[in-house]
Length: 133
Figure 1 (cartoon, one colour):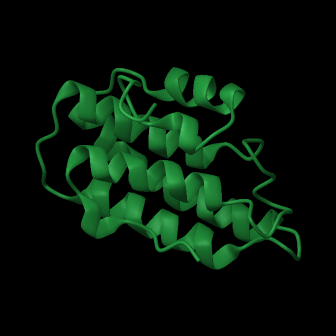
Figure 2 (spheres, rainbow, N blue to C red):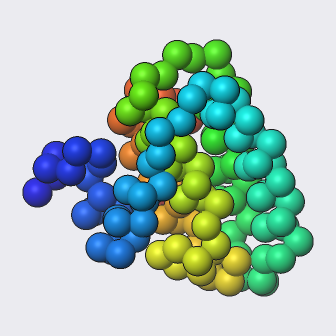
């Protein structure tokens, strides 16, 4: 049932294995650690562009990357739980072997976008959400 998860309503976003994986990625994170992550996201975007197969949705990957960089670069004060969720969203995006193959599947980044959108809703930043088709 929605709302039962203490972090997010993951049962509607991810399969059970991926739900557990996301929860493990929501690590305690300082503001300074968050501030270092835009560079990591940017590097990951470069790797995606270099390694993606012909079916990969590079536009979706770039949209997710832009939203994450905007969030991480914003001068906002997040509490401990919010920082952990943001870290989980970033780390989930950095995975290439998540719910669907990011680098080979046309829908490969859709799960990343759904996770990010839920994180953004949870932390009060819905204006950064990714539009899903």
